[in-house]
Length: 139
Image (cartoon, rainbow, N blue to C red):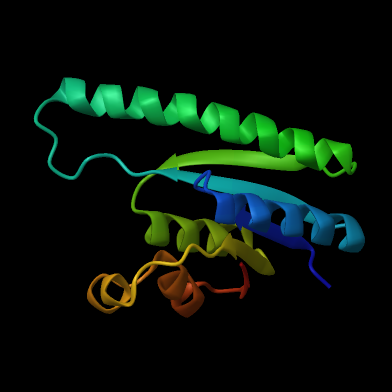
């Protein structure tokens, strides 16, 4: 049913739940599994050093996320390809899913206040709207 599954992970609890679901789906369907994590750098950095610091911190953070994800996938005998990409989260994930011709995007849901969602919107909402594949939102 799903030849290629992409899990988008920001390292949150919601993303961890989504990863678990994606790994089990990949095992059940014999799917190729990819995890994308997006580093969003500061929009208005004070200096180049700030960008370098932010990137180093993000790389360190995502190293742990990737290690845990690979361990979880290996425990079920699923091969997981990981990708850390710099950019705007929604646009980068949508482009990745399209480029990889993925059948399913799995994302975690993290609730915000009603005011936040009305004013800002959520990454989840935008991914559901813009992704070129089916989207599974895991709560």
